[in-house]
Image 1 (cartoon, chains in turn brown, purple):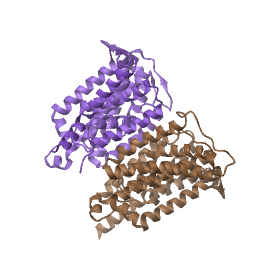
Image 2 (cartoon, rainbow over the protein chains, first blue to last red):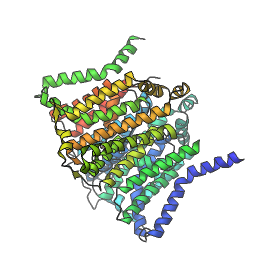
Image 3 (cartoon, each protein chain N blue to C red):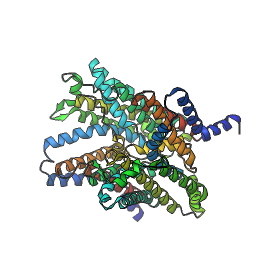
Image 4 (cartoon, each protein chain N blue to C red):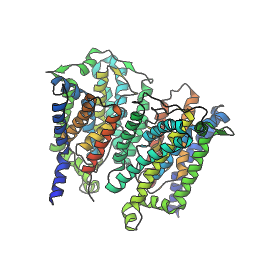
Length: 316
Length: 310
């Protein structure tokens, strides 16, 4: 009986640790900083979080299969540049071009990882370099920043609002709900868990491991491209210097959200909570004002450390 | 062993030397002013910090680990130098190295004692370490004026720049460490089969902490040398993406990511190869974009050749 309660407690802590931390952070910041609870600030917080959430959603799937995708930061930037370039040819080009190109690079990642048995870490590291190189090649070595025409329908996608909340927030929310449903309610979702849980057993049981891997990396690339397109629409230009280190933020929020880096376990909700936690910390540090913004990465690093150490200790 | 398997094996072991030779030959024939002493000195000076970091990385990868925090440790070392430079270059350098040692030992503690995967354990320091360095330095670039400290980056001994000399000596030391000491044997054993090493009574935890500590110190050395060459402490840019360059060099040099094997000479040649590739592309006026894409292709090709077969 005691083992059962201990196990339950462990499970609850692991699953809800980030949620508890987020709740505490929100309550404390609400009471401490009058501006934190203002509708404007919350809208801004949600909008800032939505871009990262889209990237982290793809990363969640990849990490549950036991892999890792380091290329998303570069693909995010590449997606933004492609969208801004494509916007001169209309809405559809602006939206589809980044999805196809970034999805294509994700597909190549997946094929290399699944078919040639190369380490995901190295393959996606190479595509991190490749995508950054491609970005430089189409922007005149970074000198050329493509603008999105301010009156185009594409800008509306990034800057349009419902009750003051930007469209990207709803897009990110819809994708996360869809992603959660796919992960927990479909055969593909089960294959994702099986691939990361015990790859050899999954292969023996007839789970299409290779196909599952190809799909998750394609998804991750596509979502990173979409996040880039949304950012370009919001900023009205394809900023070439964004996305450096974004892959690390995405990995960090996924891990903080309770998804195991060893694979086989994880939730989309946890990732969303992880995004919330990181963005609230960032927001609070900005509110304090006297603290310089570099504390943000220190705090993120410490949070990440606490979470992984706790996960490890609880699993013993 | 069939002929193809033998040929494959040979390519895995010697591919990097062939590639370096081919690239040198190409440059001797088609690049003006390449085979000059001045050019080689420049290339070596540029490659020295990467080489020093890659040596530590090779040891870590030999234990089936990886250290993502090396760039952040370089930034920490850079941030610490101006704090103690008032007391003279030696205390400043020592403090930077102590910081590297502490960071590495902390990584090793997380990997060995707490049992966290190396990627995650060192990711925390990668995310937090550079932030910490920026906080220490108030986010600013600090120009340095101590002549003795700057000499480290500008002077040479018998025509060999000091940083290259240090990198060479460290490479010899690490080569000796892996091939001639008990610690080296234990390291490879831990990387080859950690469970078997534990059952055989090897001090697995001590070896792991030691390896990560060495990697941290080497990263700090690279940070000190790069800071001295730059004549400024620049924690925002110091060692950015260094973890990727170092891992690339180690893997291209034929050390498998699966552990159990450390190739020091291969790592040195891996660094030289990547430096030569960059230099060749620059000398032929190829833009940075193309250079990055070619580097990506080289990484994939090298790992494809070196991948383990099931």
